[in-house]
Amino acid sequence: MKKVTLFLLLTIAVQYVRGQAQYLSKTSSVKIFSEAPLENISAANDFANAIIDFETQEIVVKIPIKKFSFRNKLMQTHFNENYLESTLFPYAIFKGFFNKKLDLGKPTNISISANGTVMMHGVSKMEIIEGRILIDPQTKNITLDAELKIKLDDYNIKVPSVVTYKIADNVDVSIQFILTPFS
Amino acid sequence: MKSILTIICLLFSFFKIQAQDDLLSMLPDDKTPEAVTGTFKSTRIINGQSIETVAGHHLDYRVSHRFGPINSGSYQFYGLDQGYIYMGFEYGITDNLMVGIGRSSEQKMLNLFTKMRLLKQKTNGGSPISVTFMAEGYADMLRYPTEDTRTNLSKYSYMTQALIARKINDKLSLQIMPTYLYRNRNNEHGETNGVFSVGLAGRYKMTKRTAFVGEYYYVLPNQINEKYKNSLSFGFDIETGGHVFSLHFTNSTGMITKQFLAETVDTWADGGVHFGFNLGRSFGLGKKYKGQYKVPVK
Image 1 (tube, one colour):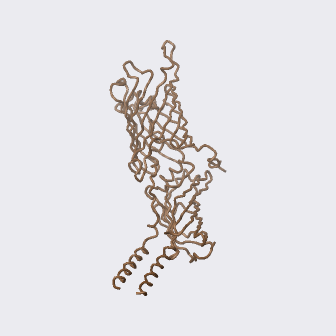
Image 2 (cartoon, chains in turn purple, yellow):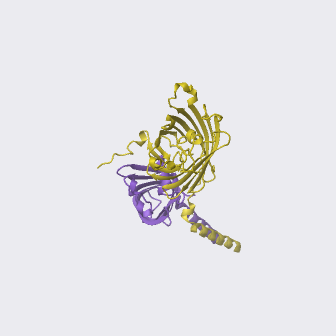
Image 3 (tube, chains in turn yellow, orange):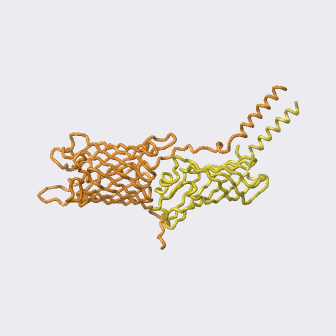
């Protein structure tokens, strides 16, 4: 009987540890920037979500496209209607795995990369995303920073020739997440 | 003992299900109602207004042209010899309130208007329609002969309009606009000063940047002289960056509501159709747009 109880407790403990290994984003910031000869375009989005399972080293990021806010509202309309087609493809999703095994118990500040698929505008593409991870075991906060370049052509985002001087071929994306344990 | 084992087994299977749970499905969906954008491409459909307003701190410069009737023959180069112009500036005070001023070469008419978005169509269980309120004043700047004994007040007219629209799907948008026009002086004997009418308009998006548009204003009977016809227009919108080009055919010469509503004399039936176009260019104004527009380097 005692053995059974112990076993039960153990399984619960394992489950508990598993639960502890999953971190969900508390705050997020996604910024896009395009630099072209005629215009600079930038937009920000604070509504992205990320989840990391440190057991499997898996990371999933989900960015609602409609929540990108541009200073020039006409650009925002064009971004949603003509380029990203946000009613058809409402999210940009990244599903990938970290290249390093991380120890949540000790303070860490290292560069890391994640290898996986970006799904955006109806196109899935393998990408390696370089970033930096900061683990604070005291506050249980994890800060994740990443920067990447998105080649518009790869995601079937066509820029008409009349505006090629206004929109860059490669758009810079910078991402920051602060994650806390998932309960 | 057996029951405990069963419980353990159950627990295990439960854990297993949990573990299989996809990480992606654990992330919340974006469920907040979001305002539907781009019901129409610009603040005008063809001649009349659309529910769209100029975005806050943005300035829109508009130029419109209407040529003469196509049935005027080769001597008039099918109408292209004559041209009427409308020029206007429109400014968005906020995202939901705009003001505009314009001038038409026809009747040398000055117009001043304001448009306010009262209700916005939203996704995820928000409002199913958009409603915009429109009010406009007109001043006729023509010099009339002194024996015409016109008072200054007779040169003014006013219009108010409710614009109700729904973007039915990604391609199709429909709008209905009950309109009331009041003229201090009517054009013909026997006309009423106030004119009630209902307009219907639609847009069908063909590609990402082109759309087919149509607009019809029905004037309720027994208000205006029989020589005036209802305005019917069809057009084609092309969007390139910050510009919207709109090419169209219409039986009205006037480009402002007072003129096309109550002063349209040509009809589609006998070829009294005018070719015309609208151009619009939008600018962001204010400090935060500084540095956004660069000077081209050659």
